Image 1: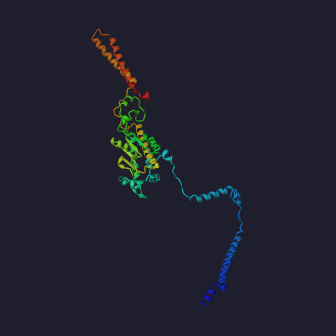
Image 2: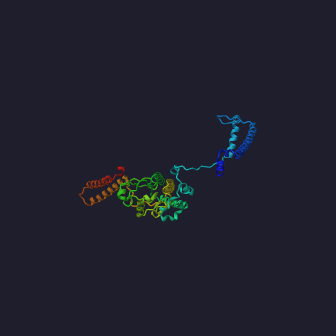
Length: 407
């Protein structure tokens, strides 16, 4: 009996005997599909009704070329202009203002003056960017504002204050007729250095500094040509003979835009008591220079701003000096050891005067001593004077010392 019941449960006749649950499942699915189809049909009918209601309104035709309607095409020009102005008044306050935008050539052609130094200008030139904290010099702690993402941030207020102080130093040195030397030996600094020197009427160096140009300048720069100028910067001739044996000139102020590469220059300036101005980054030592300017020395735009400000300060000092000279006031001390040279006419007049005085004395001596020929005495004295004049002219050209001819 047990075997018969098991075989009966597994036989195909047993599967055929239970179709009712399967039919119920299929009927419920069919009913759900029919209900969803009816709901979608109702939505479609409602949207169709809405489209039919909106389709009754007339839509203006659009021209494919001008993208304008027929009504706008037939409107007058005055109405279009009035409509354009109305839209302009409504929309002119929208959007962003991009002026003034950065123009690289303005910092060279029209550099800012010390009065134009602002925190916005320094921030735009990236003067606040320092080096990573692992490269900082502890002596720059008073110039650092904080740290952001592992990089030191330089305080722009300190940068602006030190830059204005350096500008006053350059202006005063230029007003007193001093020699200002601008040095920048990194790539891209040559134009900024040359422009600053041109404004301040100074000198520039954008190549390698030759060691010993100050401490051993007589051997390195001894053959450089020098000249003497008056208070109006006009050359005064006649000093070539006196300038030949004179010591070489030294700068009165040195502006170094990259002190890390020119430590030898700064050391020579310190040995000779020459004041220096330098751009000091967070990895440099501010004690190397006399007047440090804490700023980013790796940013070319920052270097152009600093060089332009110092150049404008030198230009202002030169204008003050020339204005004082025009009024008869000399703002500098004249060079020592120079004697005003005599012109040829003055030299000949002095020779003739000496000849006359000598002839008179010789006549008196001849009168006291009879038998001496006066003509012989006079001719001998004149011959001696002429020989002295010729020797003086030969001395100017002797040994290749005629600087004008060699130039």
